[in-house]
Structures are given as C-alpha cells and as structure tokens.
Length: 241
Length: 241
DNA sequence: GCAGTCAGTAAACGGTGTTCACCACCGTTC
DNA sequence: GAACGGTGGTGAACACCGTTTACTGACTGC
Image 1: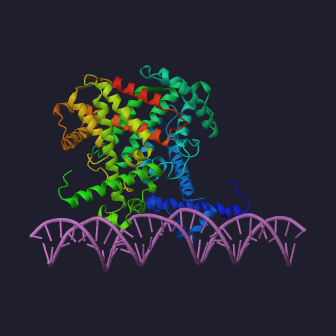
Image 2: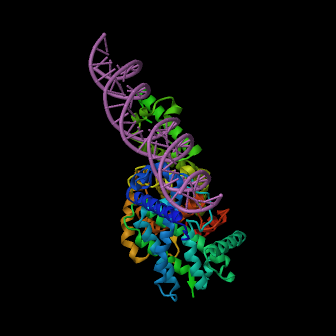
C-alpha cells in the first residue's frame, strides 16, 4: 500500500511471504502444521525472527484469517458482478452458491476462518465485522441492499419481541457498512431486512459448515440438491426489484 | 457395565478418571489444555501410562467427544420426557431450546464436539451417527417420529430433484435408529420428514454455532428472540398429531 | 508355586512456542 | 565521514508437548 521507504517495502515483502507460506502449510497439511518453525524453515530464517512481525502464533493465525477473508471476498465479488443488476434474486443465489463452492474447495481455510474457536486464534468475540468474519457477508449484503428494493413476504414479518433488538442492530450495520465504504439509504435498512439477513446467514452457514465437516446426522453423499432447495425456499420468502 | 474381574473393574475406573480429568481440563482451560502430560500429572501417573488406555491424544479426544455426547443426550432426554405426549410441537421446541441452552452453558464442549475439524480428533468423516455427532439429534427425532404423526405444510414439499437422494438417506436413518434401539414404522419415514429433519438440523446448528462463537455478522448481544422466532417459523411449516 | 499378563515407570527423541542476550546492518544525523 | 539508534536476524535456552522403547513389579489364572 503506502510503503514509502525502502525498509518498509522490504518489511511488507517478507510479511507477505510469511502469510503466503503459512497459507500454503495450512492448505497442504492442516492448521496444526502451520508452525512458526516450519514457516521459518521455508523462509530460510529462524523462528524467533517471526516475532519481529507477529506477537505470537495466535496473532499470526489471526492475520492468516484476515488474509483468507480478503481472498474470499475477492473471489465472490466478481461473481456477483457478472450477474446483471436486473436479476437480484439470481445475484443472491450466485453469491450463496459461490460461498458454498469456495468452502468445499477450501475446507481448511473455511475451517480456520469460520469454525475455529475464538480462543484458538485469540480473537476477541464480537470483533468489528469488517476485520474478517462477517466482512464478506456484510459487504455482499450491503451491496445488494444499496442496489435493490427488497420485499419481504407477508408470511414472514418481524416478531414484535424482536423489534427493539433489531433496531439496535441496525445502527451497527450502518456503521459497519459505512466503514467498508458502502452507503445504504436509511430507508432500505428496515427491521425486516436485518432480520432476514441474520436468519439467512445462519442457514447458509449451518448448511455449509455441516457439509464441509461431513457432519449431517446421517450419510449425505451429495448435499447440493439440499442446498439448492434451500435457495428456492429463500426466493419464496423474499422479493426483489 | 460388564466388568467381571477385579482387574477389569480397576481399569474401567481409571478410564473414567482419565475422561473426567480430560473433561475438567477442557472446561476450565480449553481444548489446548487437554494434554496427556497434564492429565497424567493430575492422576499421579506418567504420560506414557495413558497409552495403555488410548492409542493417542486424538483417540482420547474422540472418546471425550463421545462422553460429552452421552451427557448431552442424558441432559436432553428427561427434558422432553417432562413435556406431555399430547403436545408434540412443544416437545420439539423444548429439545431445541435445551440444546441451545446446553451449548451456551458448555461452549467448550460444544466447540469440541460440534465444531472441531475431523482431522483434529482424527474422526473419520461420515462416521456412523450413533457414535457421537448426530446421535443426539437422531435419537430425539426418532423418538418423536415413533410417537407422532407429522404433517408437512403444502408450501414446503419435497423438490423432485431431491427424491432420489432422500430415498437413499431413509435407509441409512432406519439403520441408525435401529442401532439405537428405536423402531420407527416404515410409513412414518416419508421423504418429506427426512427432508425436514435435515433442513431443521442445519438451521438449529447454524444458529447455535454462530451464537456460541459470537460470530453473527454484526453485534447481537442477545440472540434468544432470534432463536424463538426461528422456532415459531418451524411451527408454521410442520404440524403434529 | 509358577508363568504370564498388564499397568506403570524412566529415559529418550524430536518437535513445539517463547524469551533473552547479542550482533550486524542500514538510514539518519551531527 | 563518523557516530548512533532502530531494526531484522541469530543462537542458546526454557519449559513444555506427543510418542516410543525397554524395563519393572504386582496381580491373575493355572
């Protein structure tokens, strides 16, 4: 980015090298194989040198998470962009399918980012979303929100008990979206929309996680039809224009 | 169980002691604290002695998982039993709420059992369900199936593309249930029921996992109303008698 | 009483994260 | 140009870890 001096450029270079190496080790041999000494070995340096770049192994893993999230976002974004603006439903389907495909193709990255207990990577709970976890989701959803009007079907309106909670979330969403540079008109962030986003993220996450881990309650050799039917169900609940 | 000789009884005793200690370490300090040496220290023995009981640390962790699952089942079962048979919907709600409550009260156990990559505990993917993962779910669901008739609302019937897949699952379900001693009449295992079980398990799992990890895309201080609204949504999709 | 089984030990190997003292270089400043 | 401070890197060390091996010693079944 803004590495002005020569020193800063060198530092940023090896920092990238470290992350790339950690990533390779993760993908090839699992997260247990991404060890400081292994990384150091491959870079031709010694393990303590890595402490010039990261406070600890947990800190490094956290940065690997962010790195992966950035890549995931970079993978998803062009795929939605390829779908015409006038087919909002198809845009949602596309990003959901792309997320599932990415997860199945990158099970170890998915596991690290989306199914590692916060204490393992020492991640503070409810960490600002733009950092890594919900970042992708928020970005995509925000983009859709800013471009389309969403109609919620009558059958699924917001329970009264939820309105107070949702109103509180809304500000948080606005702030998070603003932080990523996406401006969403206030009136599009209805409570129902927030509600739908939460519910839908939970379903998407649940399905993909179970599929990646092979942990459906009974043998499910191919979960794609299941996934597709979940998408069509979504379509029946929400409308776009 | 069937420890006849004195030796076998002693062995079973220390085996239980090992598991209990591992469990305590897990709960108090997280899964990374569950080390062979720490367990041995607390039991007043040496680490290699543990290899008389388990092949490896991964093997031990797997048994801890099974132990936890058994406890979870033991927690859930009486809670459903407490709800009258003539309120099937309430029975489902009860078990779902109980599962969520258990997960929130035992985050580390939940993480180990439901969100640890199979390679960490060396668990074969799609391991027979009665072992630990879907065991609880299957048991509960099977019990409900054997006691009630389920009506699926017309709006959610099984997509054609899924019928072949689901038919294959059904046999697996029957076998798994039979293995746990629950006999479900053939005609109650309609394809729609299987479909609903899968979809619902994914939702339940997704919500609870996200809540336990504090990983909703934005700050959700109290997800209970969200959970409750999910339950009422379920009720609108399925009917009992 | 004897032989064998089996829980447990001590020692060792190779690996880990992390800390500390030290060193050598590079960019800046007098 | 010489001195200087920051910075990247080293080597040794510490305290762990999982795992293997060879070896005891007690209990069991005959």
